[in-house]
Amino acid sequence: MSKEIETLQHMIDESHKIVFFGGAGVSTESGIPDFRSVDGLYNQKYDYPPETILSHTFYKKRPEEFFRFYRDKMLFLGAEPNTAHKVLAKLEALGKLTAVVTQNIDGLHQAAGSKKVLELHGSVLRNYCEKCHKFYDVQEIMNSTGIPTCACGGRIKPDVVLYEEGLDQHTLQEAVRVISDADMLIIGGTSLAVYPAAGLIDYYQGNKLVLINKTPTQRDTTADLVITGSIGEVFSQLDLHE
Image (cartoon, rainbow, N blue to C red; front, top):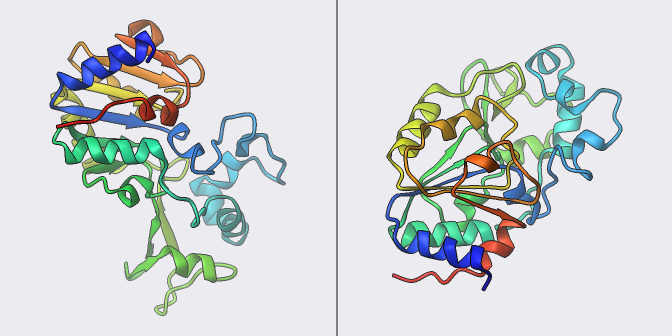
């Protein structure tokens, strides 16, 4: 066990209100591509850049193209929780972790068994009619063609936060609350480049701020512990006990 992992282990052992803040790097080990990595969506070729297609304006103006891209590139229904997801669920079950705050929209934290998950950017698993608000699961979107439409005639929209849309205020406020209250904050699989989500870590008031990422982040200099590497590999070396 490396010195960094030992330090992480010690911090976890003496903490009882851990919050985990995660980004796309948590899900890449489950086969879900990271938008900004070398193999991510931003480096693939489309008629429009992904950030344009995944904007509120594009969704409204060209819904058929939006849904063609969305079904093809945003839905990974065969993905399974990886080591990182499972370790976090276990930490919660042990009473050490109070919440997971995630920028991901894949529902893998819940699939691994995590109960308190704050999804800043929504979830592909939830969809609703914009007119009558009837709920639809992800299979309805996957199995539809063209623009998915409700029986009432309304368009069915994925419950994900598109570019130009604001974050859900209740989720944001709860994320601020749990981070402010945490005695340890572990940040993993995110470059901390996306705001307002990245700004949430400013609410952490403790002295156990841990950054785990494959590449440097903007906050490395302010962290109490920085581990460069895959979140799953790092977590797999931990000894979880009562």
